[in-house]
Image (tube, rainbow over all chains, first blue to last red; front, side):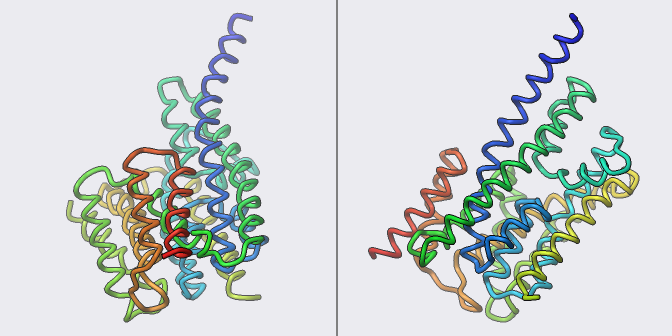
Length: 226
Length: 102
């Protein structure tokens, strides 16, 4: 019994960590749902993106590029570039999770910033805690993110002009919120600033979406040299 | 099938492939520190570009309008470390005020 209560206590601690990430991040799904509908997507398409793509930055990018008049190809490319890191998280998590068969296919879908972040933060508690944190956070974000996407999309669907509700500013604000925690030193801030300048200066000359993809050059140059 | 569905399903498929690929490759594949560094900069440049384009452009023109106020308010809110929902609401509210009343 002693061991059982010890295990369940630890689970409770990890679960608390997981939910403290899953609930606020999940509620951000309302912003995505609203942004998608304001950008011309249907409620069904907004929900499909949250269920099937399930990676916030990529989802916002797909919506942002399409809303800006971009082609599906540039929307897909931008979303995919932002999705590369989930593959790297999978590589990091695979030896810890040791998933096979159907569990691997399901586990892959919830391999995102938050699930990986919470799992890695449990390292001192052991691999069981890491696995538990990964699934509790991944499943928690999945449930809340999808629920709130639906609520946000329905809400935006029932209002008229998105601008008069500030939705057109909420979308870039969402991107700003996603990039802000990554601007940790001068190099990252310079990369961000150069990227803003490059994207704006290319806007008159390239089709929508392409100026955004072009900024990958900055990541290549700065990442390669530093 | 319209363009929005192509974008929705195409991006979903590719992003899922990237996720499952991570579980199928050995961890050492992309251990090169240069690749890791480039990869940390990719979200930074793409998200920053998206902020700029969504705030300051309409079609292929650079324009300054109510959205900039909203995004500046969002930046102040982030600097003050308020929660995400509060940040979003203050951005939307300030932009809406300028749009409707200025």
